[in-house]
Image (cartoon, rainbow, N blue to C red; front, side, top):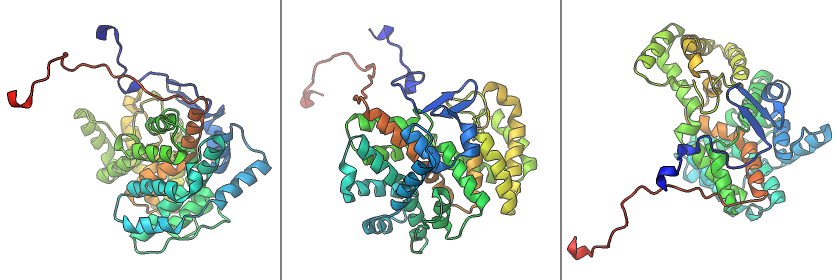
Length: 377
């Protein structure tokens, strides 16, 4: 039998379910949410509007968006016990702290135990607001400061920057953070979304699924690209050294971070929207050299584009965070902020007509053999 079984390692190329959320065409380098091009959404929409679109399936009316925004803002609160938990593990990695706090919220908020689509919607909205608050509170506490209270006059992205840095972001900086969240909001059956669906498949609650997703995202092969790009930029140092760096990497048959993607063979369609934002933010912050280094790397990598080694979205994200003075160990948690609505709707989709996800492994161990008592071994 084993000779006739095809193994798709990593489930590559395997369709396990239908989804009406995001459409990815890797060959053409195209991405859409609910039928809307990522280019239109990144240019014209807001993160709050994209959250609504992903979760409810349609773009909201002005009234629906106002109500949804009010629900998000009303959820900008953390139980006092969460701040105590953060203080107890303040020296831990931010992803470990975030995962621990989401898990604790499941025990602290009775509504988190409810399942069903209505409960998942309510808990999803609440968690979407709470995740950035946890990250900002941890950053304050581990640096000896009190957490910053949310500003209810600010949108989701601007409020996150306010709580993190305790200074109001410029309109351009807030918009770039907003676009960053839009671009990361949903991306099909990636590792963390699939892991969340596996959890929901057991009829677990949403908080349990988000804990699973966070644990999966924490792995460097999934969520670590932005941090790795920033390390590369520091290693290169100046734009004139980029070509030598790339040549050495290619000669050693090593990957150049930020190029290539498991799905896209052409340039990641999300990347272009970060590129111009990085340039503008670099000029605003008085540090244009980071953008110049990135573009020098792109130029040095251009001969390899025909092999599918094109820029991905994480190539630019890390520099945005660097320009804001955000520590590198917060890069993956920031990814989680943007991905929350995608995880929520993936969990809701899984719950509709739920089925336990239970793939098979093909046994290739020893043939059946007799047990030998320990005295005879």
